[in-house]
Structures are given as structure tokens and as C-alpha cells.
Image (cartoon, rainbow, N blue to C red; front, top):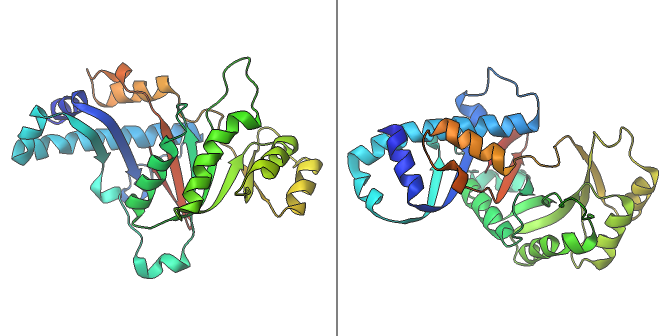
Length: 264
């Protein structure tokens, strides 16, 4: 009943939160090294969905059949052995950093993503969050006005002590300067894609040094998880489900020391 139970739950759910945790801890990706960040995300989603759907059938058979008759506001898709919470006694010694990829256009989902990450890790706040807004539509330029709603949500979370520091991704010197001058909470970092430059632009380097902004590098694609890709892996993992009805809103990837954890 594994796939049947998972499909039945999906049909009655309004929202799906899929948390992969650190899959390396239970070995499903140890034998395979994904070539790109996008492939890594797809693999993690597929492994989690497959494992979850096989176990959810057992749970429903044992004690949760009544759930199938109810409407689920939020359906949590997790694999117990992949979930790690931080030991409170070790929290002060650890730095929890996250990168948030917004897939949909709703900036209010930023709070949901941060709250879920904090809950999953058992912490009150994240030390840093870097925002990657959704790609702009054709014919639209990436501007300060486009970034502002997302940055304001991050600023609110800083003011509410949910995040300590916030950063940006793929801003050139002009846009980074515009954001810095406008923002109430200044960016502490800016990621630069290795595909766009092999050497940091001198003007960006000089501005970042002047205002104490850390420049980091990354190799993430502009669109780490598109709607079609998610629907495809959902259909492959749980056959005959209405995958076309599920649209990803955000993806959050966090890092703790040298371990990489994924949350979708």
C-alpha cells in the first residue's frame, strides 16, 4: 500500500513540505556523486519521496487510516533517520548558514522556510541566510525594485531575531551598492557565480572591502529547481499521482560545519 497510501495523502493535502535532511548520514547517496547541484537536488527529492512512500503505507495500515478521510492542511514528507537536530549544548559552537531559493513569486514564503529550517534543526535562529530570488521573466531586468520585497521579509526576520545576518546572490557592484544604500539591514555577504567570472570584478571587490561585505563563490544554476523538474521527479517516485497540481514555492539548503543538509 506504500505508493497507494502516499498518493491518497497527496490528493488530500493542501501543502507539501519535503525535508530530505542529511541523506549522506543514511547512505543513499554515498555511492553516487551528482555532477551538478541541480542533479543533487533531484536525487535527494527522489530518494526521500521513494523512502517516505514505502513507509507511509505501513503507518496507514497500522493506525492512521482515518487520515485518508480528512483534508490535510500540510503534509510533511520526511525520512526519520535522515533528520538531525542540533544538540543545545553545542549550539554556541556551531554556525548554521542557509541559502534560500525562491521558486514562486510570493515573498511571504520566506518566513515559512526559515521557520521550518529552525524547527527541523531545533534552533531558535539561523546565523546567516543568503537569498536567491526567482529568475526574472524574459524582457524584465533584475533591479532593486524586484529584490526589495524579498529583502524586506529578510529584514523582518532579522528584527525578530530569527536570523542574525543576511546576504545576497549574484549582484554586480551597481546593484549591490543600491541595495546597501536602501536597506535598513545591510547585506553581510554577496555570492558570485563561478560560471560568470573566474576573477572577482575589481569594482565589486573594492566596494565589498570598503563596506565589509564578504564575497563568496557558488556554482548553483539560476534555477535550481524548476516546476517541470519537480513534477517529473514526483511522478517518477509516486506513480499515477497528480504531479501537475504541485508547484514548488521555495527550496532551502542549509550548511552546518562541513555537512550539507537539504530541505525542500
